Length: 381
Ligand SMILES: Nc1ncnc2c1ncn2[C@@H]1O[C@H](COP(=O)(O)OP(=O)(O)O)[C@@H](O)[C@H]1O
Ligand SMILES: [Mg+2]
Image 1 (cartoon, helix red, strand yellow):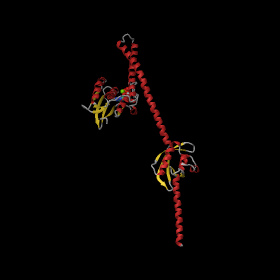
Image 2: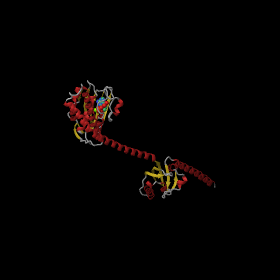
Image 3: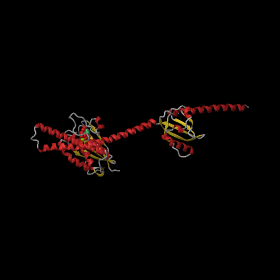
Image 4: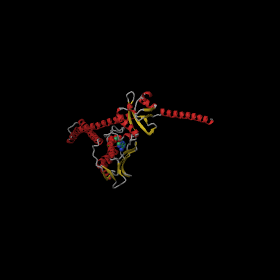
């Protein structure tokens, strides 16, 4: 008798404990940050937590009277129902996927749905939900905006390409006629007329340069520029460009050198385009270095790359210009009047080097000088 009483007390205590435990689990389930739902094979919910109700805008009573089929948006209906059946049939089912639900308001919510592989007693599936509507939407918007921008960028390239093509002929005509008049002899012209002619000649020359640079740039942007990559001795184009530009350097009172001496350094490159890069870089060094300065061209092998540097003791580039110096039309404003040139040379160089899978950078300090370097791969693979 005495023993039985003890047993009854024990049972009551463990019942209380069980109830307490159940309440803890229920609270955990109810207040989980993720949506949780327990469904039977027909898609009828045994339990739905607060987060799911908030997500779909139903009261608990309403939701408990609906089935999975009622909650799904038509886009996801077939796929989600099939997967649900497969789970109960023990077939392959998708453990995690995006499913579109229809909220009470009719609004669609994109939900990242995970199905636990644990089958609850009584044959129930446990589903967990995370509302990813905003994330997916902003991703979609970003994708669309990106596509729109790419379209616009393409249109811009086409537009520039067509416009510059159209400009090329009239600009060349103006330039040629002005040069012709000057060549034939401008002695019949008054001093004033001669000045006008020179101004027209100079402007049309700059215009021709601009049109040509813009055409080069748009061809590179459109990927229309043909490149012929070959493993070659980089010293050859360097020596060629050096020889052509050396007289200009010495005329400007500059000491130019190619050091250290190397017979051959092999890299993979397109000869004509790399000559263009070298002409631009050495040309800039000559243009932006005052008399008495020095210009050095050097080549060094660095692992799988070859580095070519053009160093000068010229006016340098102010720090805040450096990050933009390879952008189109970026020219440093100086006190010596408006800069000559198009501001497109470095942009062209960078695109050419990029097409070679190389890199280009500059280290510069105002009034001390600059060092422009580009890298080229030793081989194409
Ligand atoms: N070696 C250099 N030293 C100082 N400034 C330079 C040098 N190279 C380029 N720059 C600056 O970068 C600008 C852009 O160069 P670039 O694209 O070749 O255009 P451009 O020579 O037609 O002006 C130049 O206008 C100049 O301000
Ligand atoms: Mg230039």
